[in-house]
Length: 506
Image (cartoon, rainbow, N blue to C red):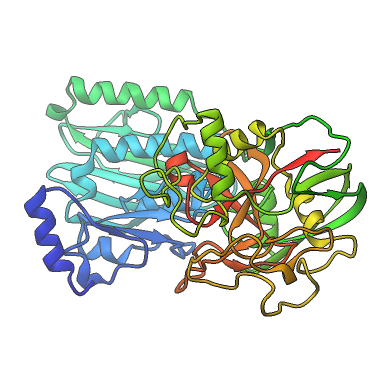
């Protein structure tokens, strides 16, 4: 904020019209440099409140936003009475929270009016609570410019408001329209213009007084569109839900015995405890489940889930796939990713850095890992299979036991990896190396709700970002811990902290 005036000047020199918009509540003294701001979680009252920054600077645009609210009528009403916008945020960090049909219909009507009369809503003549409505729970604001008058109304009730909504004096040469319905109001005689109608529960309305000369074809076309919007509206308040499902997992042939450098894991049926850091991206569930959890779970705290799983016999790699092993795969198969961005970014001119041959391969995405697994006659493990191999028959907290100990794993948090067998004392009960720290490991199940894909990571990594709880989890992790990795695009999914190991069915 200290350098905002200088930065504002630089932006204007680059291209006039670029705006700055902050997420936090904007101090009023910075309105001159920030033309937009969030009105995040604005706590409106029953009698509609006023945005401070909008009041001091009428052309300042504030965006109503309460991203976890499944019903948007409160935000719509607040934005409507303040002549401001709404931040449409349906994909909330990978959790899809769609709007119900009623809210979408209300927003379309509001948006069209705000665009048509943007100069009024950004002008100086704004009178909050300009008159009292005869209908209880209905509130009215007045906006004026030249001879135009525009009244914004809301119904705070959970039931329709019907009857006389407001009155205004008739003026010669003026036409009166209900912009919500796209219909002209005919008073029938000189005297008070009595506006009758109906406002939906938690709905909005708009009345306009406009001179005859300004009701040309452009305005009439707008009225026709508003009438169509009214006819196409739905009263459905059902919150749409998208469920996550597994859309892809790699299969493999069954082998009679473990392949070289793999260890055998017996069949098991167990109640598996899994933990994750409760973030806004959630875990497996859809948004409705996430909201139910958030009502009792503190953000950025450990959330525990349990699942009953039955796993057949399988064999798992002793170690994560190394740089040397991945190089062998490339030479033998000629593999080239469709999107090469950041692929094996840590290699130098296509060669493994000296001394890193037996470090885990990184800068590979899920497709790159699957390609290796198929070439090797293997597959990626599910997160449950990975955890069973790590915790052993006794359900240990860490591969070696129930306490974090020195010389058991790579405990770096600076991003420096170690060789996959650098800590033989950290081997799991089944004989697996390097299942804690060093790098996160990809698992094989790819999930999607039709909008967002993700995969589960296990094991932790040797890097941990400091300074904010919002950063990705890092450092060595318990066997039970998992992190949700949103899949964006290979060039972004590939990173220095994620590797993988493979399994086969037995």
